[in-house]
Amino acid sequence: MKILLLGADGQLGGYLHRTLPTLGEVHASSRSAADDSLRCDLSNPAAVHSLLDRLRPDLVVNAAAYTAVDQAESDVDAATRINAVLPGLIGSAVANWGGAVIHYSTDYVFDGTAHHPYTEDDATAPLGVYGRSKLAGEQALAATGVDHLVLRTAWVYSLRGRNFLTTMLRLGAERDTLSVVDDQHGTPTSAGFLARATTHIADTWLKERPHARRRGVFHLTAAGAATWHGFATAIFDEVAASGRLPTKPSVRPIATADYPTPAKRPAWSVLDTTKTLAAFGVVPPDWRSDLRKVLAGDYDAASST
Image 1 (cartoon, rainbow, N blue to C red):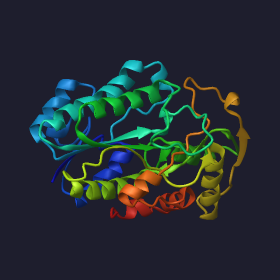
Image 2: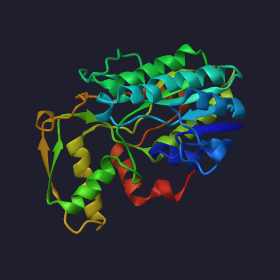
Image 3: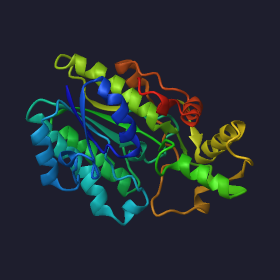
């Protein structure tokens, strides 16, 4: 099987590049790919079409996304090209040769007013440009009719790149006290878990095609819920216990109103993963145990699912 991985140099893409080879031949594309033939500007439709037509992959895993939530408020065109338009371009092309697409979306498609974990059937109502662009991408992909899965996830982090975990580790080494928002609730989910789970899902799903033709939106996160403050506290508890920080900083809870940002974020965006468990047998780890695996380097030590 020929697999095209888009966004291979990103946080999630890096882990997918390690897990997907268990399924077939992986062609890892990014703007800075070492192989010139796989280098692609995903905001350029002509370049995307050229890459897809040349490779004609059996499966496209699209890990590329515009994820700068606050910057998206003033950079609408860029967020729209990558998050909203690109999935439709991929789906339209891949449908021509009967391939399949796995694409990622976000908990930010919801407005955060619910008091229960959101299911795939709950009404969407994104609060900002990022969420709206990601929802538009889901819809554009579905409209092509291609065999596809949209995996909605949340609060993705790892020891690589810029994310909440690496930011906390950096600030915790620099400061004695940190202030972190304590009235936004979600589920911290590691990129390592996502990559392993995606590979398992793809394997299960593709073995069913074309009989079951299961498609559509599925939620994929770790289990449980936390606030950003709770997540930060857990990070420092784990790091201090391992001796990686000489002094554990104090983490002060604050309200969203005390930390204004250009983009409005949902106060509650916990996702219900029951449908994904039933369809693919994915049992999500508790977010705290997932965090411990990340900090212990477990996801970096092996690529097995």
